[in-house]
Length: 147
Image (cartoon, rainbow, N blue to C red; front, side):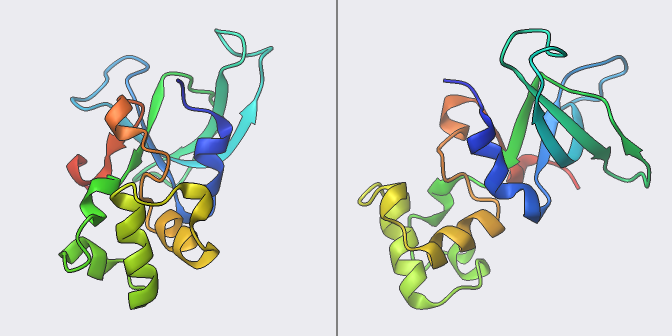
């Protein structure tokens, strides 16, 4: 499996960050960018069918228009939400009904397709890994990134 547009698009309105190891002078942990657009441009991709990103570098006010292909989105692990009484669940800022459903989803008792829209929106707004990309090493745990 690889990261596809369907994995990134839901997070775009909420300031999705990605980490890339591309380029010279890569700091430990990689460069962190906030995505401002996504496109599929096979004509510009190094490997056919890869995703191109338009981004702004965090901490700078200028927009860049490079395409990065070797990247991983930074998301919160779904495993943080397996306990309805845990602090991460409280920090989601949603009602108890959505918290109960999110707990069931995190514990794999219900599928993504079964989530009510309100719970789905809460998870995406909070950049929670709803596609379970982190365990497949296709995304980075947002909690481990330094601000």
